Amino acid sequence: MNERTELIGGREKREIRIVDYDPTWPARFAEERDRIANALGAVARRVDHIGSTSVPGLAAKPIIDIQVSVPDVDDEDAYLELLSAAGYQLRVREPAHRMMRTPERDVHVHLCTIGSAWERPQLLFRDWLRHDDADRAAYEQLKRELAQRDWSDMNAYADAKGPLITEIGARAQAWADATGWTP
Image (cartoon, rainbow, N blue to C red; front, side, top):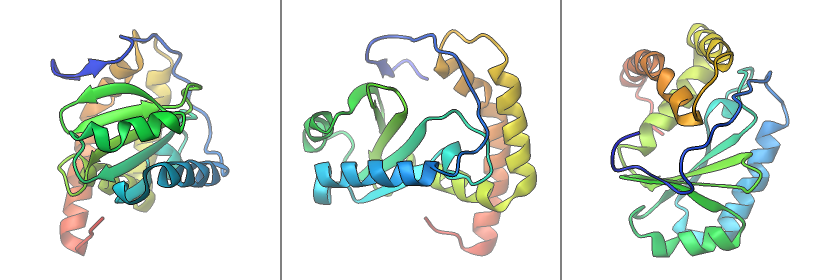
């Protein structure tokens, strides 16, 4: 997080629980994708399943992460009220990114501008972990180790994954360059 990140409701201490991959996660994503698409219509240019629950075989926190690409994430009038009416609550406001979630906190909706620097890395990281067994295993091992610690909030846990994510991201970028991968 940076100094320009606004956490609606402040910091939260939550248990970090990693569970084995659940084959129902893609269906759960599909339900939420339809809910989002119905709420936003053409404003939602892309709705993608991201995060660990989008990678078959990868253990994860049982939270479905969804990336919604909109024309301009800073134009909150175009989507915020519509998603709120569909049952999502604003949690994070930061440059180039907003995050909304369900009241149950089991779905996180990440909003970004289509074609932005925020959009592409999420999709590349997902696709690389779907492709590379060694990095998928290393990422899972780190998540399981970190989940054993007591964290002041989920953001501290996410920050602790940063160095490995950067390392994996570099390999993913080399793969994308070599193969012509596009989101």
